[in-house]
Amino acid sequence: MSVLNAALAKCANAAPIVPKLLMEFTGTFFLCAVIAHVASNEAGLHAEFAPFAIGLTLMVFVYAGAHVSGANYNPAVSLALCMRGALPFIDMIMCVRLAAVSSQSYRSCH
Image (cartoon, rainbow, N blue to C red):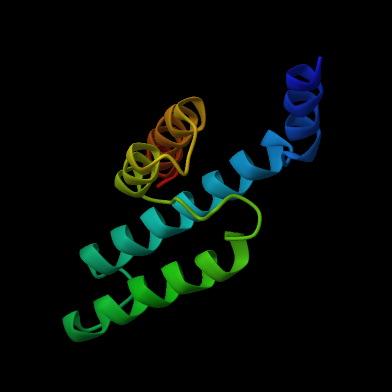
C-alpha cells in the first residue's frame, strides 16, 4: 500500500501537462519564427546580428519557461534529458512531437 501512496503523491505533485505543452509550443514557435526571419533576412538585419537575435530569443524563452516546462525547445535536449533519466520517456515523446507540430504551424502561418 505504501508504494501506491508514494506513486499517488508523486502524481499529485507533478505539474499539469497543459501548461508545459503550451510553453513548449510557444517557445518553439517563436524560436522557429526568429530563425526563419533572420535566415531569410526579412527583418533587414545584417548577417552578423543573426546569432544575437536567435540567442536573445532563446534566452528570453528559457527564462520564461524553465520553471514551467523545463525549456526543452530543441528535441535534441529532450532526447538527452531522457537518456540521462531526467525526463520521462512519454514526456520526451510529447516534447519532440510538439516541437514538430510547432515548427510546422509556423511554416503554415508564414
